Image (cartoon, rainbow, N blue to C red; front, side, top):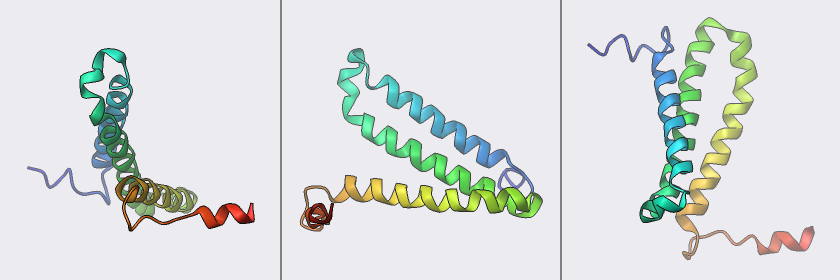
Length: 113
């Protein structure tokens, strides 16, 4: 039943579905910022990070399709995929380790600026 959905080499649907889920989470992130949704405000950061992660994963899956069917687009998107993974790793790192002993102290960097 799902064999056609997960054929990411020849089918773009999974990447599109994940992108739409990421966009939906982004819309939920915006809605959770409204004053009427103050009760659920603590879920807002989770929706934002999940939105970003789903969009990066869907971009990765779409690149598999482009690798086989559109090599020029694949080469163009490759650098943006790397940049998006670095930003995602940074966001997750700062959200996870902020306030703990394992958090990277970057105050020394201000001396050089």
